[in-house]
Structure formats: C-alpha cells, structure tokens
Amino acid sequence: MMKTFIKLMCSFFLFTVLNIGLFSSASAEELSAATKATLGPKSCANCHKSSIRAWKGTHHFKTFKNLPKKKEAKAIAKKMGIKRMKNKSDCLDCHFTSKPKKNKTKVVAGISCESCHGPAREWMDIHGDFGGKGVKVNDETPEHKITRYAEAEKNGMIRPSNLYNVAKNCYSCHTVPNEKLVNVGGHAAGSEFELVQWSQGEVRHNVWYDEKVNNASPTNRLRMMYIIGKALDLEYALRGLANATEDQAYFKAMVERQQKALTDLKKIADSLQTAEIKALVAAVNTADIKINNSAALTAVADKISGISQGIAKQYDGSQFAAIDTLLPAASSYKGNAFQP
Ligand code: HEC
Ligand code: HEC
Ligand code: HEC
Ligand code: HEC
Image (cartoon, rainbow, N blue to C red; front, side, top):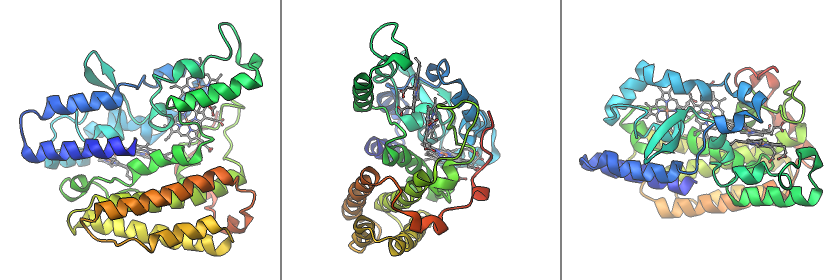
C-alpha cells in the first residue's frame, strides 16, 4: 500500500512540476487503480451499525464536509496549485475515501472503514460467507472460520488481529510523507501521533462483540500497541526521510520524529530484555540520515519493518508488564470515545 502511495505521490509531483495539461487525466487513471477496489463505508453499514455510529463522531468522518470549507485548507491548496480538493488532488490520499464511478474517481467519504481495514471489493463476499447460503455466523464451523479469515486476508482485508498492518495505515497518513505538501503547501509535517492515545479516544470502536460497551483494549494489547506504534513511527520517519531532497521544514520535522521515536524505543528496550526490541534500536545505528539518501534509508526502514512484524506475531503483550509505567494514561486519549 505504501509503495503505491509513494508512487502516486511521485507521479503527482512530476506532473505538477511539469505543469502539463495531462495532469488531470493521467492522475485519474492512477487514482482509479488505487481506488478501484473500494466499495465505500455504506457497504459495511448493514452489518456494522455501531461501528458506523462511532465513526460518525470522528475527525476522520467530518473532514469530508469540513475540509474544503476551511481557510487553512484553501491556503494549502492554492500554494499547491489545486483548484478543487475533492477532484483528483493530493488531498484525496489522506483526507478522503474515493471509489470508481464509471471511469471516474468519486469521493464518497472522509477517512473510512476501508482506509484502515483495506479496500473491500475482493474480500467482502468472503468476509460475509459463513459456510454457504443461509448459514448464520453463529453456525459457522471452526474450520470454515479459519479458512474464511485466511482467504479474506489474502484478498486484502486488514484484520485488527494483524496489529502491524492495521497500525501501518495510521503512520502512512499521520507522518505526512510528502515533501512538497509541507515545504511548498505549508501543511503540518505530521501529527504528534502515539498509537495508544490516538486509537483509544474518538477512533475507538470496540463495539462488535458487545454492542452495549466500547471498552478500551485490554492491557496486553495496549502494551503491544505502544511498542509496535513506536517501531512504526521510527520506520515511517525513515521512509519520510528517504523522500527528503532539501534541507527545509520537511526534513527537519522528519529528523525530529526519527529522534523522538528512537529515544522512546530505547526506553522500551531498557525496560525489557527482549532481543528483537534491542535489534530495532541497533538497526537505526546503521542509518546515515541526510537528504537525497533514499535507497539506504528505505533499506533501514524495511529492516525495521521486518523486525516489527516479527514482534507483533511472536508476542501478545503478557510478557511486557515492565513497560506499564510508560503507557499513556486514559485521560490523555485523543478525543472522546463513542458511548453506545
Ligand atoms: C454481511 C454482513 C457484513 C458486512 C457487509 C460486513 N461485515 Fe464485517 N463482520 C461481519 C460479521 C458477522 C463479523 C463477525 C464474524 C467475524 O469474525 O468475521 C464481522 C467482523 C468484522 C471485523 C472483525 C473480525 C475480524 O476479521 O477480525 C472487521 C474488522 C470487519 N468485520 C470489518 C468490516 C468492514 C470494514 C466492512 C465493510 C467494508 C464489513 N466488515 C462488512 C459481517 C459483515
Ligand atoms: C500524507 C497525508 C496527507 C495529505 C496528502 C494531506 N493531508 Fe492534510 N492532514 C493530514 C493529517 C494526518 C492531518 C492531521 C494533522 C494533525 O495531527 O493535526 C491533516 C490535517 C490537515 C489540516 C488541519 C486540520 C483541519 O481539518 O483543519 C488541513 C487544513 C489540511 N490537512 C489540509 C490538506 C489539504 C488542502 C491537502 C491537499 C493539498 C492535504 N491536507 C493533504 C494528512 C494529509
Ligand atoms: C482509523 C482507522 C480505522 C477506521 C477508519 C475504522 N477502523 Fe475498525 N478498527 C481499527 C483498529 C485499529 C481496530 C482495533 C482496535 C483495538 O484493538 O483497540 C479496529 C477494530 C474493528 C473491529 C473489531 C471491533 C471489536 O469489537 O473488537 C471491527 C468490527 C471494525 N473495526 C470495523 C470497522 C468498520 C465497519 C469501520 C467503518 C465504519 C471501521 N472499522 C473503521 C481501525 C479502523
Ligand atoms: C487515510 C489517511 C489516514 C489514516 C489511514 C488514518 N488517519 Fe487519522 N487522520 C487523518 C487526517 C487527514 C486527519 C485530520 C482530519 C481533519 O481534522 O481534517 C486525521 C485525524 C485523526 C484524529 C483526530 C486528531 C485531532 O485533531 O483530534 C485521530 C485521533 C486519528 N486521526 C487517529 C488515527 C488512528 C489511530 C489511525 C490508525 C488506526 C488513523 N488515524 C489512520 C488521516 C488518516
């Protein structure tokens, strides 16, 4: 996903720089490739009513209506040479969900279900088939469930159980890895994002297994989120640095992000005697942080990605009580959690 994202960014950049008339048609084709598989949040609504209600209280939902009206947004768009934010612009990738309509890209929502759980065209039918026509979810055999989950994931579903993959999405947007958008557009150079805080506030929708409550995730899960979140922050800071071509605001912000994530990871590594976490810290020592060093920095980011995925698979958090003092307090969660 990140690869296509970067590719998209690069092609946008190129076309904007060349300022050729082809811009709209060429990017439309690229975008339809990236959005072709998207069905839109209405496709989840019948079965996931509570998740939809939770989502409607978020900035992710509201940006759809609010963004184009905002003075700050208009100023950024103007500097970027964008006339309509919802029309094939750089803004689409992070602020909106688009799906194909005939051969065109149609913006249908803000950041929505498929932005985090994966475009659903190829996995929707699998996800909702519990063993043939008429078989209800409660009558599904354990074997069928295993195959169904595996098939859905093979076809692009990002399930919450895959913490690394679901959280990776957050960082691909919230680090804002787009140099021109920051240096020329004056867009914020990423969020002060921490996975526990930012996922357990307004974004929280743990409402599937019991619709009457929306509890924060269990402590073991929060520990894993804290560690994987810091590792992703480091990885995506390095990916952001790999895109840097000038020593300006964007580069400086990414350097700061990288240093902060590393400091926090060192604290985690000091608290836990876990070889893989120490390996994360060690991997960064090989990084030569400077502009125009894309290949080398991407290689370090890839290495960190591999180690992080291993940690996410191998541990469930029960081993990591020693970091409980580092976990953010519930009072610092970002926004208010939905109350069913
Ligand atoms: C036909 C009804 C139906 C539709 C439509 C549907 N779901 Fe589900 N979903 C279910 C059921 C039933 C479960 C619980 C069974 C299970 O674990 O898969 C579930 C579980 C889930 C889970 C948690 C279980 C897991 O796989 O880890 C996620 C995430 C999810 N759905 C996302 C979505 C998204 C996103 C959409 C829209 C793109 C969607 N669903 C559309 C019926 C549906
Ligand atoms: C790489 C992802 C990305 C792209 C591309 C992007 N944004 Fe953003 N934008 C974000 C994130 C993440 C935030 C939230 C920042 C924060 O933590 O406050 C944000 C916040 C904003 C805000 C402040 C929040 C608000 O709603 O007032 C404005 C304004 C904005 N973006 C405008 C734009 C415009 C205009 C474009 C297109 C030219 C654009 N953005 C493209 C990721 C992106
Ligand atoms: C910003 C990213 C994001 C968006 C948008 C999003 N989800 Fe999720 N979803 C997650 C994450 C992360 C988890 C796991 C949360 C945790 O473990 O605390 C999750 C968990 C779930 C679960 C399991 C809930 C449970 O009770 O365990 C379901 C079902 C689900 N999402 C469906 C949806 C649907 C339907 C939508 C759209 C209305 C949606 N999600 C929008 C990121 C997102
Ligand atoms: C497709 C890009 C994208 C993804 C994926 C994404 N976000 Fe966001 N997020 C944004 C943008 C853009 C905004 C700002 C929206 C606005 O206010 O205009 C935002 C805003 C937020 C806010 C509100 C911040 C505030 O100002 O109060 C929270 C919390 C948040 N995101 C958490 C998450 C979490 C947690 C994940 C992953 C599970 C995630 N986001 C995934 C783009 C994204």
